[in-house]
Amino acid sequence: MQYSIGVEYGLHCLVYLIDIPPDSTIGIKELSAFQGVSETYLSKIFSKLTKAGIVISVPGVKGGYKLAKSPADISFWDVVEAVEGATPIFQCKNIKNNSYLCRDEDYAACAKASPCLINLTMREAEDSMRNVLRNKSLTWLNEELDRVLTPQSRKDTREYFANSNTV
Image (cartoon, rainbow, N blue to C red; front, side):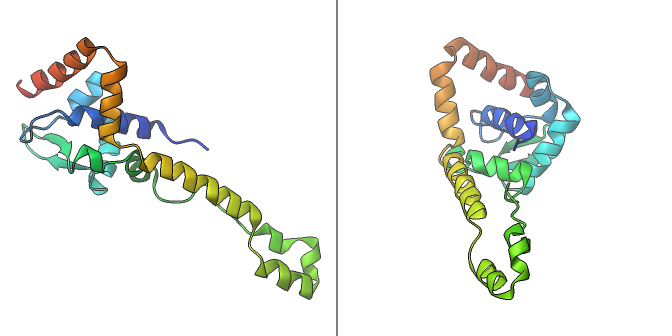
């Protein structure tokens, strides 16, 4: 199992949208230049984030993106689901119902009536992961970044985006 790099790009870029003034936006060009990623790829990610209601796209010369809701209301899971989709990671094919023993009608009826323990376990694991990601918001991430990064790097990041909007 692996999430695409789009999840990481999305989370990193969304953090930069937290501190901008309410009437401001940040463009894909600025976000991609700051992160050192492809504008085209980042545009695709932001299209998905827009469709999911995580960001708002503002058209025009001064256009760009801004958060559609409070950073406290945007979880890591929201971003994962927007970028990767909602399909479960584990796809049970119920192969237990196709075993050699299922040629016997009584055994087959019993097997089909009981849940697949592998599927139940895999779904439980996925639910645990989703719950962890649902409990981490952009606000949490921003606070953690304040804790682990130098104040100067945070200031320089904010100034980069503030200055890129005035050009």
